[in-house]
Image (cartoon, rainbow, N blue to C red; front, side, top):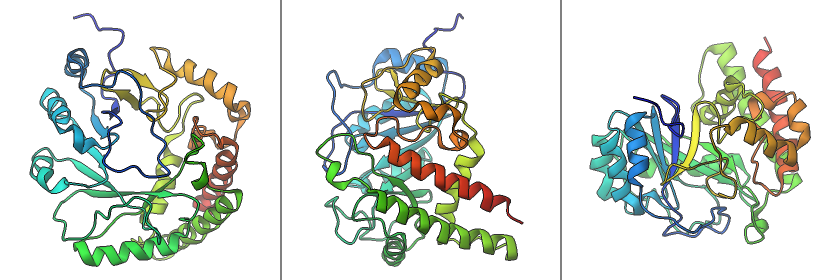
Length: 320
């Protein structure tokens, strides 16, 4: 059979944006709705069957509002590894299905002193084998020590360990700008990474001990260090990962779907990066960073932060 030129590469991972509907409206969120959002297209399901991806992660909006579409995809490619990123509202009624299909569940929880999300997903025992946590760092929520303390409190409530994998809030519009990380915030986060990851590496090298409190922080950096992006590849779109909508259209960013990617996606992203930040092409940490967030209106601040962080981490890992 002749391969359709729009088919996904064999064994690639995809992140599937189901749509922008959500039952929470977090003030710092940077997703944008777009015209023509709808269910999974039959053409895309056929494409998935022709070239089953190695893994599929379901995103929204809130993916649990799209369970009918999730079930269609799982039925089409049952051999894939599945994950879902959710705010956790109403998840209890879907846990049996997720167990049956070996989903990894990633639940959003910021651990902030003043909650901006309006929902706490960790109030009862949670019996599920593969659970991760996504934590957003934004202005007013940058104290990693305080956040990790909140995680330890929640572990007593739900009866299991919680991972800590933080990510940065991105400024994409004037509505979420009030929560933008400032230069001082970035400097503080950098020093905290050095402190906690430095402790982790020190104990690992001296005693062979993995400190679970800081394991997530370390793994966040180590996985990026191992990637070695080619210029034009980014964290969101690279040789092993595609971000696609319910019709199968690929984008450099799923939340701000202004630019579409075709078959020559690497060159297309190189053009985007050259226009956004020409210095990325010669950057010493591009292989780890992947150009930071290419839709962020504060891209220069992110670049400054990541260059300092990854330069430090590379030296620290190689230190005897």
